[in-house]
Image (cartoon, rainbow, N blue to C red):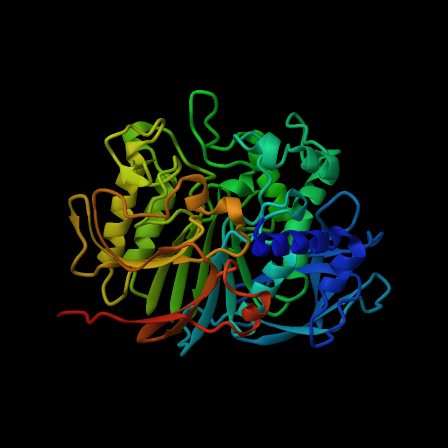
Length: 533
């Protein structure tokens, strides 16, 4: 066994303590001695006039706590059966204003120190700068000993946050607890260690308000709560779902096709979000009737699958879950429903922001040869090929990919960015053609953000024998080939350009201490294209 692997296993043993309530509370305290009280975790999101916050406490609260936003009181709602998890929402706020927030108990006693949180600028406001932190695949339970140990994940997130981003986007795979996939009974949610620690789900009953709720908390809580604690209390977060957030891997064979999600998968994904991270707040240009939006048991108008980050006139990010509403309908199939595709194309055709960024949960430009991808390519002998049929793959997926790429390329005066995760890699490339669509007039820029939680078994080279590669039917230049490293990116946006800063850490070669001084290993600058008269 290598020294590096011994070290990682030792860190896994250390990380096991992070699932205990007292250690969860301790990890939520910031280095600046901000007093988090009994808070285990706190994750906020905002729009220009609203705030939504998810929080949990070490101990159940018998009476609803109160969140004071300056002199106003946000509404509080218990989201679990015991009173450990709470949601706070408030609207009617002023755009671009910094508010002071204070949590108190029912009697008015402070539950934590005050902290600031700022709303976004109004949609018509001119903003000069925005810094966005993005990464993927932060999930993984230390009891399974397959993932980067939690102390190292915390270290990566803390280093990323040290660059003071204005907002954080975590693109998919917030949790890993597969229940039916090929590895479920050996290395995932139904493995002996998993069942001994968390118990087993009953797929025939609801998740919340039943014995399933305690299983969910044990399976999910240690993957999210210690990683964030209260570190993001002043940073709006946007958490997206991907396949593992529905408690399975995307797989298809004659035994089992895991997606679209069945009823239990939806309930489990919704329950995880309800307890641990905020839904997407409404936005004027996103229809309230999209799938997974405006549910009666959620904050009014909130969306669970499709979100918008609108930052004045400077930037708009379109975030879309490519798993939850996938269809298996041959040539008319899609990763997102037709009304979602229409919304995406309308926003790309609009010209009311300096920059527009597509953030799908499934990348374009690269493939690992697995089933749930835009592309028909499969892996054979460590290479991609289309000479072998990919079972249950749908040609409509590629057709939708081509339409979205074309809509991006047709934007005027904006670089078409598609920034994704999923593939456990860092990469950057330029797409100049997809099938018959010529994109060379305004090439699509595709970026892989880098993962946070991937372990030895999670890299494409481990389970497919190859790094992500460029699939067939594309003219795609890899400016930085997809590389299997832990990391994250920062986007620095100004009205005339986007600068992308890439960070990576190689646990095979670098010490944990190296994380604390990470600097960009690559910087790319994309100036807004000139609009021809």
